[in-house]
Image (cartoon, rainbow, N blue to C red):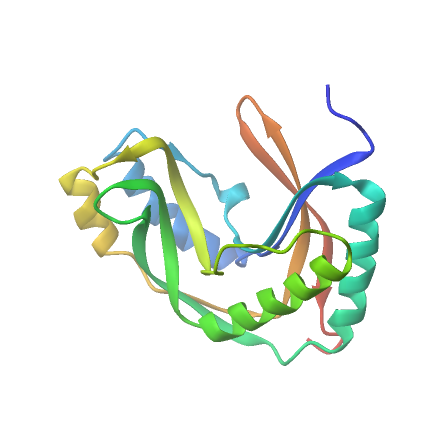
Length: 191
């Protein structure tokens, strides 16, 4: 049983529906090539900052501080995901991802601003370097990619959209996988 006063949350950019449609067609082909734990359409996002489990009151302080940041947000920017790979490296992967070659600087800058607010709100600093990506699949332990899958990943579609905001998202772990529920949308008033 989970504590109702504790919230597991993160901040993320969620692609629009038309991008999710294209991504869904690509991932459907990949699923036929390997029995990995594939993420679902409702789970696809680019994390800006994972908060982990925290008291709801602390998350609320953070969420309200993000609203102040929202007023000073830069203009919307383009995000472009066009290359697939694996963590920790493509040859021996524990996670498959789709990464960007456009909008990375803007995503990284936005993540940096969210990070500063998280730390000011009492969250410990993130120790890993920020790398914008969208997770496609996870493996229990690192393994080489099947040849057909590696070839299919090399043919990843280019997905582009205008990022006009980001979300605070609740994450609930269930036996069927994580369930993500957007709690708040942050965007410029004129976006």
